[in-house]
Image 1 (cartoon, rainbow, N blue to C red):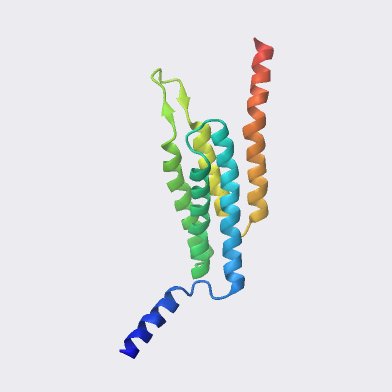
Image 2: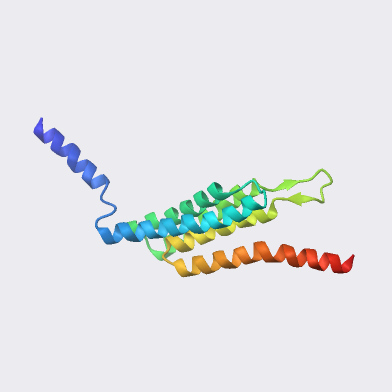
Length: 163
């Protein structure tokens, strides 16, 4: 019976060996937390604008995108194969974003495009964080927040000047 339990323990140890040391665990934790935080910031802005995809959605998209590149990195796949993973994430998130787009009855009024673009961008930010490009992910998030907060004000100002 002792050999059987040892086999079970050895199997469990092998299955949980994807974090072989503290440095690797810290690296993955930081990347996932940064993805979650940045996604949450974009989601918070969307919630403040009363949009359907908010904090949780954006956080999950960012973490998911980061994980999709972290796991292949850990497995040691080649760059060519990583590009296929990234392409798959981009296409998959496109379908998720498409679900937020609503076409009005008049066929000319479309709602949700900014939210869909935000979800798509959140995935890109998650990919950047997962790939270890945290500074780029942070810069992109700040730029996105600037666009989401400043451009509507400029649009209103321009509209008031025309009218």
